[in-house]
Length: 97
Image 1: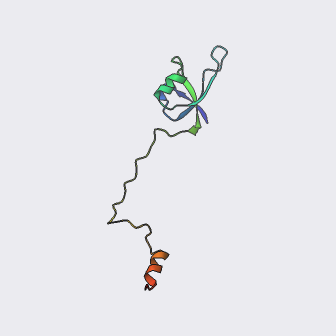
Image 2: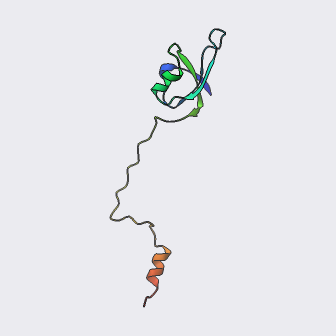
Image 3: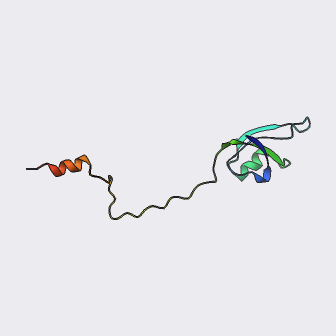
């Protein structure tokens, strides 16, 4: 869905489609680029523009990283497999000379 947003409300990860009024004196200018940083806002959009059109279907989620999960403490050396494997059972059940 394409919607109109003020330039000051742009965030990283938003996909800017175009800006302009759509009139003869102020036509739509197509950008079709994602906002990767604050610098890209000034690079793609002129200072006199107040509102731009963004596409909500294209979202990059750059600045929204979740916190890493805390690791469980392990008791001693962690095992690769929580149950006995065939190699473990085979070594235990066979008699060796």
